[in-house]
Amino acid sequence: MTPRFIRPLGIIVLSFFVASCGEEAPPVVAVDTLDTAEVRPEIYADFTLTADLGHLSDEQKQMVALLIDAAQIMDDLFWRQSFGDNYEEWLDSIADDRTRRFAELNYGPWDALDDDKPFMEGFGPKPLGAQFYPADMSKDEFESAYLPGKVGLYSFIRRNQAGELVLVPYHVEYAEELKAAATVLREAAKLAESPDFANYLKLRAAALISDDFQLSDGYWMDVKDNEVDIVIGPIETYLDRLYGYRTAYEAYVLIKDMEWSDRLSRFAEFLPALQDGLPVPDEYKWESPGTDADLNAYDVVYYAGHSNAGSKTIAINLPNDEQVQLEKGSRRLQLKNAMEAKYLEILEPIADVLIDETQRQHITFDAFFANTMFHEVAHGLGIKNTINGKGTVQTAMLDLASSMEENKADVLGLYMITELHKAGELGDADLRDYYVTFMTSIFRSIRFGAASAHGKANMVRFNFFLDEGAFVRDPETGRYRVDFEKMGTAMENLSRLLLTLQGDGDYEGAKELTDSKGIITPQLQSDLDRLTNASIPVDIVFQQGVAELGLE
Image (cartoon, rainbow, N blue to C red; front, side, top):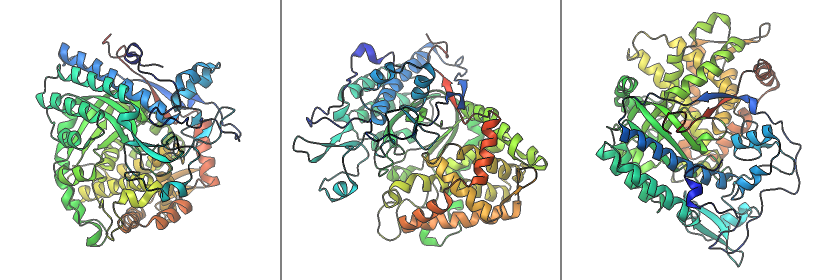
């Protein structure tokens, strides 16, 4: 499991100590354990990540290998954030091969696709704050502590020798590891054929060792001519289920699909008009989304860290920095080969079991691709700041921020498709394809479980749409079909509700919606069990690396 680049550098520190604080952090093993969940590595379908590298020069291929080296360092850091510094020793202590494999897939002893339930004896629930906070810290203690920067994205909360809460920046905690990753990025920059991408790699290297990512985020938006790309660093906050403040390390190494990217590039210009047309009062859409957005398709050749844990991302919407988004928009990266894997291995088999035969022909890869793409584009719609002085939407929504945002992006993605179809911008595409494929994908994402922001968002949407009559279940066949007219109404109603909750910073309203709708009913569970009984995988796992790409 140890990345090939890390071990020679000697930078793995197997301890639970914070050198600057001098106090041992509590272990992840809980005293009171739960009944363990099943060990089930078979829920992941194997898929080999490859791409056509024939058009790349020898220097570009060497650069890809170096970027994978840097990604592997992110993988190590995510392990430590998720489980603890002693993860390698712990993995080596697992005698059963199936259990060890499942632990590797989940980056710990908790099943990411079953509400993070422990699947090994001796472990209790996964800590809501992962390893970001002291295990003995209460919310009251954290919220009452005078600790400037305590809601920051790039720091740990630790205790000093006096037992007081203190901040430890990531670049201090992981100084050696991040220095090594920065060195690799700088070496990769020397091989880059795109001067802009070379500059970006050097800026990102500097960001890793300073925790100041805004400059490199903004510069990344301006890099347009590179066929090889990398997303790397502490980015998403999903791992922090206590507050949703702190980011986890991850990486993707990407090869751009130039033909598909050309097909997508024109849609960004529609964002301002779509923002104006949102079904909410003007104060909930006063911000203007950046029009310098970038829509591209990629083959992903390496996942690491957070992106590789549990359910695998098939599209990326970055940067997350609100200021950069407002000034420059976002880049939406569609991971085409991973998307095809999920479509063939999971979505089509689900449709065969659960979708009415009269609507089965409306399940298409083009619709799946478009729904996923416009989900990412829709993150740019709505507003990033509350309308009543409660700060950013992210801050006001606390631990519900991620699931609320994913729900908004899903439903507004469908809204965008509907509006673009009305305007004739989707050619001769059948709108029914998008609606039926959208509904089918809800079943796919619900199976990620409540521990996933995407899974929770899809539970809310499934129950909301069901209550609105957007789709119905035939009690005789157990299959679902879309009511296309009611689907459009439900889409508009849920869009209005989510945008209003976000704009008002209404945490209590968001919690009520999540608690009432974010559940799996006995009927739905019975239908999901049918998918399990049909041996349909829940997600995919990658065979990946330099060997798979022929770069050894």
